[in-house]
Each structure stands twice: as C-alpha cells, then as structure tokens.
Length: 66
Image 1 (cartoon, rainbow, N blue to C red):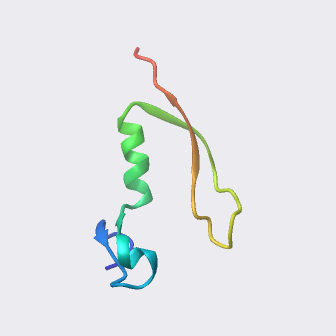
Image 2 (cartoon, helix red, strand yellow):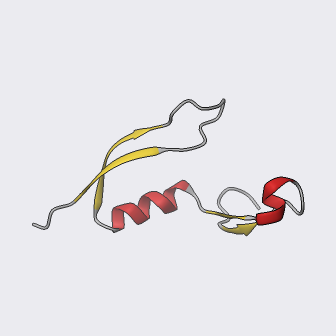
Image 3 (tube, rainbow, N blue to C red):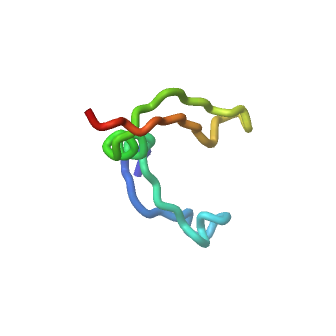
C-alpha cells in the first residue's frame, strides 16, 4: 500500500513479518508525537549498521514551561 499508508501489515506467511506482522508508521508520525509531548529535538544520528539505515537516534530535551 506504500510508505504513507500507516497501519497493520504482514507478508502473508513470508519470514517473521508473515507470522507476527508489524504496525507501520511514518517517521513524521513518530517525530510529531515527540514534539507534541513537549520535547525539542537537539540532534539526530543514523548509525551505520547496514547499507540502509535501520534506526534513527534522536537526542531531545523536554521544554521548560515559560
């Protein structure tokens, strides 16, 4: 269904995802949730673990009330 289609999916029996499934969310969904929870992003890193980054590290700081 494409990257922008969030929700539950499986590979119909192929590999681990075919047996347990996964809930796909876009990166922007996660980042916006963190920002709405009152955090400011300070720095990002994508450690080299394969040809394509498989995870993102974000350093955040909770906003102090004004």
